[in-house]
Image (cartoon, rainbow, N blue to C red; front, top):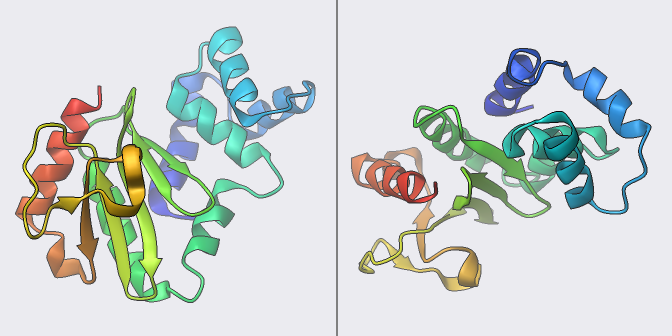
Length: 178
């Protein structure tokens, strides 16, 4: 399990009033056809924030979020340090960052998604960013395969590429994602 997700689980009792296992028991008493219905239930009926609700629902399924991330990096293990470094940086921006693993990527959200981490090849992570009105450069490319999910993409091959310039783009995307 990645560190950011574990931190979220550890903080769950304080932030939501219940531990993950307690939330899982509550969800088992309901019958939701869709992930979004369970998230809405936790938000509306229990006052859980979107980030925690999404994490609780994802972890209550038979294929938890940790498995989703693990599966993304099978055969691409050399990319895990890049993924973890991005999460470490983003979680310093504020306590409202939500990390939402999907089958092929990890969405980073506040009220809205501001970034997307996708292991694109065995040697490259594509970091999608929502940076409206920011010019495209050689490094800060058009969103490419992300389509409307992001406005820009940065291709990352090694840790050294997670530099001050990239961190400033991430921070700007975070600030605009509120």
